[in-house]
Image 1 (cartoon, rainbow, N blue to C red):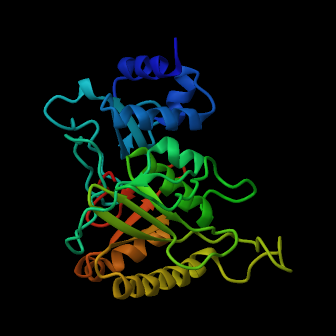
Image 2 (cartoon, one colour):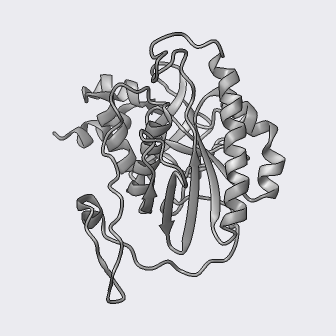
Image 3 (cartoon, rainbow, N blue to C red):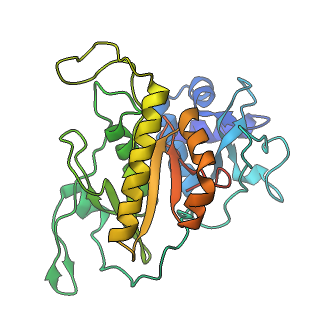
Length: 293
């Protein structure tokens, strides 16, 4: 029996939704990240319904939940529709998952991009008879020695999710070297999105002469500064790229949720989307409800 078979069997026997941790324990699939990766594939293939904000029927916690699509008759049952943090739960997707970023402008279809196989080798490809620029190599794992909410790792989680959902990554900035410019650029089906990504601060310095020493500024206070930096960068991107869609991305911390909520009217008016990334690699829209990207 494969790990996918174990996950399907476990979900089939469960009376409700199960989180990744409980699936890993009950189905004996380890590490837990393996459950996350396989559940993402099963969700994309429409074999399971996967959503943040579901009540796990085993541990009783509100987390990212999973259930079989065949159990969803006539929409999300009440047992799965448990709201979290005041957000409205989403409905099961009826079509292939796609980013629901408000259209900033009508843009012409992009030049055909490389296949995933070519992307993985970082090779050039031919578009309309002309050799295209080699695509950036998307990291396959998080940077060791850094927390998952470090900006570079948040960017990797976002890029990996977009890649799984069929988006082609045209630019992936090197956060470690503090490369300036657009953090992540992705295209799909005529959509062209520029992402500004931020992390969440740690309690100690992670580089420089003070590395390992405790910071004077609290993480939540520093996160507010980083949020303001992201807002400024967003305004500059809107000015510089009026024909592109602009999106912000943050790790899922309550500080950022509050800041997003407090600026939601302005962000809606500017047609800028904001997304949250969880430690397990799920990506959700943060404006108007937790709608699956």
